[in-house]
Length: 307
Image (cartoon, rainbow, N blue to C red; front, side, top):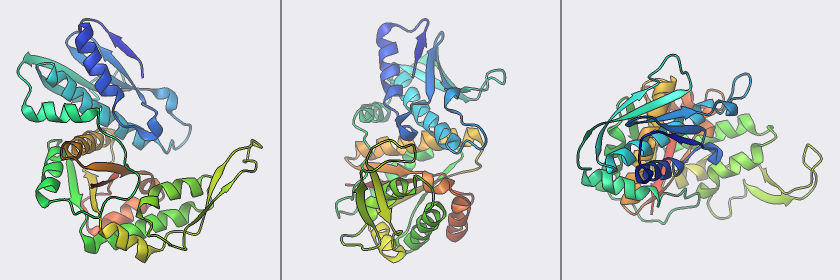
């Protein structure tokens, strides 16, 4: 990420920049640049990450920019301004994802201060959670934080719907199992959900040569998760699905904004969280899950929260 500023003072610039840098992003790439013209803040996508052809990571980079926009809004509010946010505001600048204007001086709300404070404590928890149920009122608070972003539906996965998600993850795994990065990716999707002693997933370390002839260690996973065992593990956790009105870039940015607000609300409630997106990008996985769960549109992000 790079930062360019004009009229914000040094303290304000530091608060805004720190908030944006701390936003989660796909593969921790931070695919954005920050500009601070006048009394505005602009977030621009870094186009050098674009791949030729289908560019499979584009949706996740757009969602990542949305998480940075959510943090950007909070930082400007903490500085004592009411914000006005416009997504893709300039047709002449296709890479400009959002402009957040500081429109008038006002004291930040207690909720904004709490969410901003949670930014520095947010981490991805990619292990199993403690077997302690998340209180219903806490789940409602997390969903409510996300619901402040228009156009995003946040669905709480019911225990009897866990098999649909487990089946989708397994379906995506089968579709990817011959891919060169399958073993590493699939284990990262489901390792936190694997019951002890699950013989369907066996991992070893291969210290031979990779496909480029370079020496290194590659995680090898044989088999795919057992759907029934995976379903049982998922049913014991609190899982949220983020469903936008469409898969257009503007709605994907909103997915990132909603997910980040939910994540910060979870941190404020002393919870941990992690997100999954990659399985939903494989073939028709997201559409299949939407059909199984009767969702209004394909989900774009899966979030786990827990103690």
